[in-house]
Length: 200
Image (cartoon, rainbow, N blue to C red; front, top):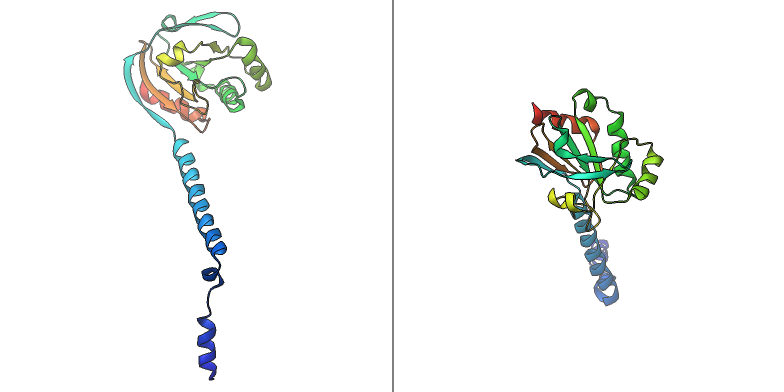
């Protein structure tokens, strides 16, 4: 037999995967697992994308008690613009850290914009997180009524709770913008820029 014929026979040697059904099955299962992983990863990236937009409606009024025992009525804050910061509350470190960073940013106070964080917790539950991250801004305590009125429930990882979102209300009580951020973060500079653009 010539060297060329020998090489040809080696090149056409049967693939062991073609003869063993178990190996074929392993190959099929591996491909299916890869497809599932790609699908789950893609879905995760898609659901983590922010959702925001302009609005133009009279903001629902409300009165809520804060972690310091005071009451805040939205309509009484006019003519100051207000940002409502709905979040998952107790146990969500990134939510509390978001407020800590907003607190440190001088631009909100300079622009006369008040930020109201709203959670569905008791004062005792959320105070642990505020102490941990050094947050001094009182949090407003919602039983779900205000979150429902602003359509922010079920926007995050936990059913029945708000996600990580912001609502801008101008000095006349009109809701101008909303933004939902499943990544659990919006840089304070970016938040301020979004707000100023709608108030200009």
